Length: 127
Length: 120
Image 1 (cartoon, each protein chain N blue to C red):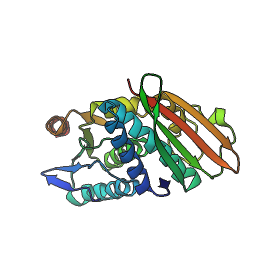
Image 2 (cartoon, chains in turn purple, cyan; image 1 turned 30 degrees about the vertical axis):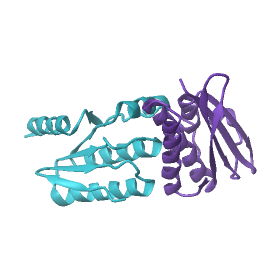
Image 3 (cartoon, each protein chain N blue to C red; image 1 turned 60 degrees about the horizontal axis):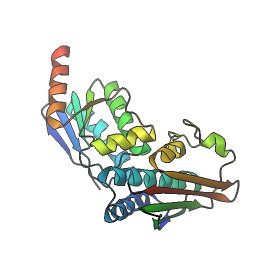
Image 4 (cartoon, rainbow over the protein chains, first blue to last red; image 1 turned 120 degrees about the vertical axis):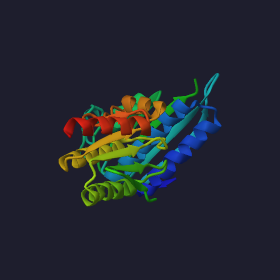
């Protein structure tokens, strides 16, 4: 789904929670997923203005999970290592976004190219 | 989405809904501070029981509301943070440092009344 306003942030996290609940995630885990989506969508709006969030159901050997892909064609991140440190921010926000999101989820991957954009891929598995 | 603000004596009570956008939160921040001035309120309770996600923007806005209201000489207490929301906030690294919190509306009111007593 397209993310380009603060309304889209709300819509994206609601969709994420609905999907998580449908898959049988606990309320606690659904909250972690919805919060992670909120932060990822917020990064898109704050840094790239517009982008996309895709939600997918994934199947492991014995469990199901949710895959979230947040992508944008914004300015990208020059120093990913620095961006993954708690407290780092360039837009005057709290700057806890990415390391925080990594703690909320089970798997976290980021690729970014300055001038090209950023793709963050996260997964949460059902307990 | 408008957040209703109720006036109960010297206290204002704002009740958050689940799906508040950033614009709604900013609107509420302005509205609350204005009403504290208008009614010369001494306390504010922000009830977040219905909020199912507290991300970085929401918690920063709550902190700002509490700090602005303290500068006016009034007290703010946040009530009703759900356990799973508290868990997610801690994982995300969000804190509400310097902001009073209470279990629910009743405890929040009791907290404010106690505060008022100490000042009077």
